[in-house]
Length: 336
Image (cartoon, rainbow, N blue to C red):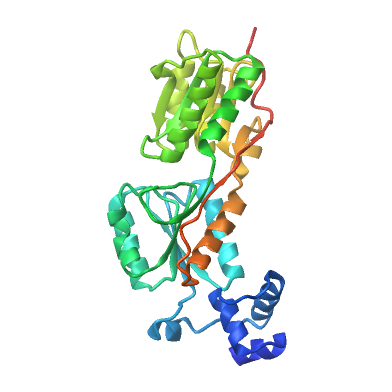
């Protein structure tokens, strides 16, 4: 089969080779509709830029890197899918790296991505200090953070308003009449989780309710840890009537703990989660959640990186999206 060339794309689209090149490189003043039309033609002709030749010439490889803490976590799996879909739409391949939030792994993957001569990197994993990213910044790679931000880094980011999300969760439970609240938080190094907890605590305080320290449990991000922490809380003589879980995996663990203890959800214990992955709607009962616009975040992160490749030196953009409360069957007024 004869491989399609940039000349074939230009002829089919009725444009110059330079215009096709601008679309590939995210440059030029080309309308969104025209750009998408040319990308569709590239896809139909199965045209792929020669990444090796581009790399040797010091140009694009049309490859992006994505660093996530754990690809088995459905939230980051859905982020990865969105990033991959948007990258493919724009002519980029995506290398996905699962770091387990371990700085040694982050460092190793950063060096790998630099060696692969990726054009840009999307970071969804925790970075405690900018030194780990120096190899990327020294090579002027475009960087964007997703689902987190780090003011110390001069990089664009897209995330949800975690503080507001925590407030929404608390307001919902307080409106239902709950006063005995508890929180299953992620590790304190996860800044997004810390903001969610802070928002929750501040909203409760605004209603005259102070959460004792023992009512906030730091967990790993695994289902098993959510189960273990929730079970300990629900076995207390005066147990909470509602749990706020900072991600869907912890909430699933909490549902399992309640079921094993013979507690009905939501009649005897309400559960609110955060994220709204596919798991949230298929649990029993389906979870009330503070939803993140996961697909939109993935698309925007890719667009931020591609924009950073334009070479215009635009300042970093920090995008904060609003969370949404979605009420399902895991919350109800507390037992009388």
